[in-house]
Length: 179
Image 1 (cartoon, one colour):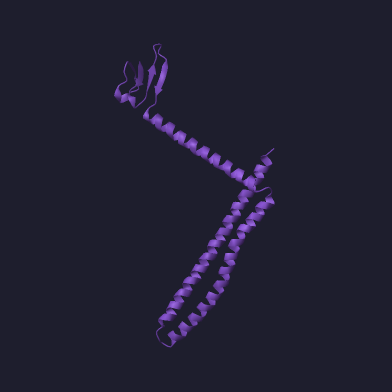
Image 2 (cartoon, rainbow, N blue to C red):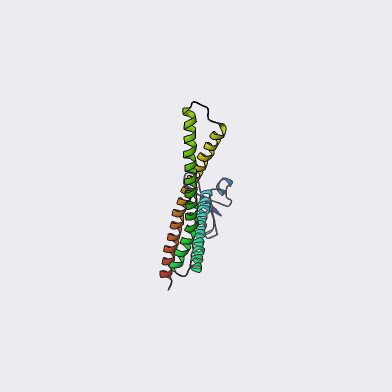
């Protein structure tokens, strides 16, 4: 025997479940009238699937954090080791910035000279030679690229520091939590 509720909220009983209610959910009853099996409605199935997806997502996040925690405690034994690793990671970006700054000074001096030559030619009311225009364009492009390199590596410095600070704090939390 089956029990189902129609759109008006009325409860119906029958030996067979009408096809239109197979998707909307029903209850199968035994001879004593007790629910033996509940057929979920489409919305109940969607809700259950959504809850399962969320639960799976939370579990993956918990598992990932456990993996990261294990890697952190397996890699470092003291906070000083984390600081040392941070300093090594920062060194690369500092060297790139220093190299770009040195090259930028050379390019700026070249640009200054090229601008002076171009100004002299322009004041003499002569057209700029194509090779001078090309040198100016190349030097301006290189100057722009060097500035972008410096900016990108300065952002990387901030990012690396933040990552290692977070790792260090998590390491402290894990060490104080461990008995």
